Length: 268
Ligand SMILES: O=C(O)CCC(=O)C(=O)O
Image 1: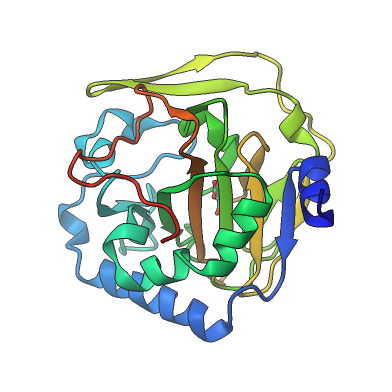
Image 2 (image 1 turned 180 degrees about the vertical axis):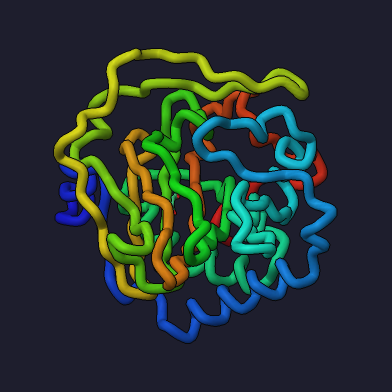
């Protein structure tokens, strides 16, 4: 087994500084901001409620698996509406994100981490704007993106410097061995969460991952992670891509369902 894979299996994550150039990150950020500028935010009813899942019955959210849609922060910045995130198919809909996401170095990394037939399932730009960028409560990605067996892998890229002050990622090293705590399921236009374990996440042992622009954090789908609200004056924009193994079964009750005309693709 490679050293990289051994570290990943031990800790549940890898941090790779300088994976992307600052120019590439700026291009992605600018493209994301342009997409937001083209959106009539006042007409968007849909806020992203990372904690309470209030968006769960919303057709704007449920139909976004093959689209690029904006979701608002619940809180305004003064009078200004702010976008929490864009999702969930930037990697298939926007050429710049397609190229960035299908970098052969990512394909090699994902193969090294054991995915035999990778499929790019979900992508998001998470803005975490100054002052109003919301917290992301502790969760496992396998709760939301389920295969049997579980294969989801998160690839998170700092598009701006992420620090404790502006809400960097926080991970629970080794926490991928604690088992899946809940499953978020969908039946038609209804979603709900099944609790599989009532045990709370440990309060100790979390690691704040301060990450310079261009850093890649790859993490296991069962690894608990979270981020705090951004109350600072500095933005913390990130791009995140979730990959599954096409050799595992993608569950019918996942919230993210792609239109039949837009099947999932791999790195080529
Ligand atoms: O960027 C964040 O704050 C959270 C990211 C996350 O939850 C993910 O990439 O799965």
